[in-house]
Amino acid sequence: MLFPLRDSNPTERFPFVTVGLIAANAIVFVYELMLGPGLNSFVAGYGMIPYEITQFADLTGGVAAGPIVHAPGPPVIQLTLLTSMFIHGGFLHLIGNMLYLWIFGNNIEDLLGPIKFLVFYLVCGLVAALGHILTDPGSVVPTVGASGAVSGVLGAYLVAHPRARVLTLVFLGFFIRVIHVPAGVLLVFWFVLQIFSGVASLSTGVQESGVAWFAHIGGFIAGVILIKLLAGHRLRWLKTKT
Image (cartoon, rainbow, N blue to C red; front, top):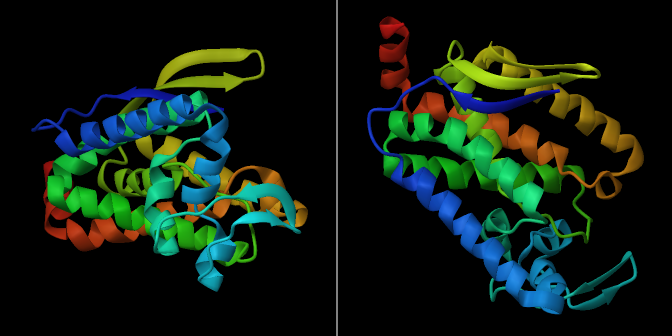
């Protein structure tokens, strides 16, 4: 496994949006911790449920397809496509996503500027959710987390900074090292892993896998495409600079 720790890619300006997104996710997580027994209802109400999106229906109460007790969500149920991006299923889930966002997001914000970056991030998250919905439209299991949007950031970073050096924890059985790895190698490895895991999940069912792999894949592809549309001239300048 390859686990990034930090990159060696300085920015020209402070990443206010990246820090703001991390703070927003952290605040929501603290709120989750304060809910106590009400946490399950909050996740069921404001997590993204494919069945609710495809059927334009807000599930409440028990559903025959599973043991989850559904709670009312926002007035417009499609808003869960956004709210779910800021909810996390645990401390490690939050820390993992926020670490990736901090390492790679600041450079993409630097490239796009704060407003474009915020739009980019949210659109990648929406496309990621749609990727999950397409593979399991009838699922009644809530999907939460910033993974899809962060995957878009990774896709953009691959396009913009493939040669950047990333300090990485390499863990292969008994082989454990901390080394610098080119971002292109790290991110391509990550994406291939998502594809293999996603294909494997199709044989067992997306709900049972516990991870919305195709949200990661959809978000990553969205990031690759959007960065070219939003920062084409800057990308050409980066190539001439390097």
